[in-house]
Length: 391
Ligand SMILES: Nc1ncnc2c1ncn2[C@@H]1O[C@H](COP(=O)(O)OP(=O)(O)O)[C@@H](O)[C@H]1O
Ligand SMILES: O=C(OP(=O)(O)O)[C@H](O)COP(=O)(O)O
Ligand SMILES: [Mg+2]
Image (cartoon, rainbow, N blue to C red; front, top):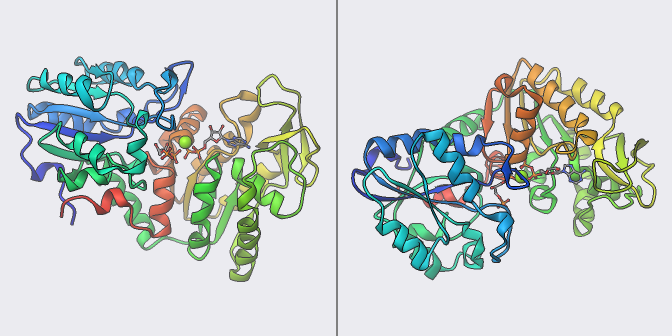
């Protein structure tokens, strides 16, 4: 058993809380705050116990550079509104700015530190960086399920210097997803889409024997379309995963898993809502065109396949749903999942934003803050951020 928040003394202490505030943003405005709201139970507990709260998160993938569009500042403002208390902001997560902000904390105060990934040492899990983070606090909490599959400094490395326990969000995710997938109901479908193809394609081999139906859409589908030998135009394709996709198609067939790929796409001549667009069959993507959504025939096939399912796990939008002209595939799958009489789990920063946008979030059994994390958990992998927690 991993230790949880209530088993440690936080009163008056400096508490480091790793959160996942990697929220979708458009022009600096948060378009979905689910990941922030999901941490409120832990934060309210810490406020009630007069802790000095130090929040740390990544946002996007700035790859070690201080790119302003990846600043966490909008999240401090949003959190302050949600909690109804001031939330201070420190311009850096280590060094002078962080140390000064932490020294200024009184009991019941909160500071959010700037993006951890402005330092390349975070993703590289450099011990000195983990130690610098650890030194800010006396106690550590992981409430960042969405990034628990990453062995990064603030998630895994830090625990060698500061023991970490699970916050309420992490505990809830482990209990729900762990429970649903340890002895899954059948028929069981997984739906995988989105844009993080090279990461998420790696889980499919381990998923195939667990599920009855595997639906592939979104950016993920294009690499499979390429594996079938069809042209993909200017679509997002992970060239060095085409061979893997081809072998997954064979594995699915050999195991009798129903692997469903789109049979048609909405293609566009540019990555823009204003681009020209049309529907083409899956083998009909021409040069200069990119697949940005699944087509109407695919939506119907996917919805029909989902109808009899007793368990559905979905990560990754079916198209570029942020643009209205390419949102219909995601909307259709969201509605099909919402209509299911089985257990439904939707995970991922963007997938949850899509389900909220479609207006069906309250019809989903469990909204998970983790996309890649829930897939790896489902696959049966030990997540480094959870493994590293105190027993
Ligand atoms: N066909 C596509 N081409 C390019 N991007 C896509 C496509 N389909 C979906 N996407 C993008 O995938 C992104 C989400 O992917 P990902 O981060 O893997 O999902 P999640 O956050 O739900 O785990 C969205 O921003 C969406 O626009
Ligand atoms: O948004 C996230 O994952 P998701 O897109 O799979 O939901 C997490 O914050 C992890 O981010 P990362 O995939 O850049 O490590
Ligand atoms: Mg995402």
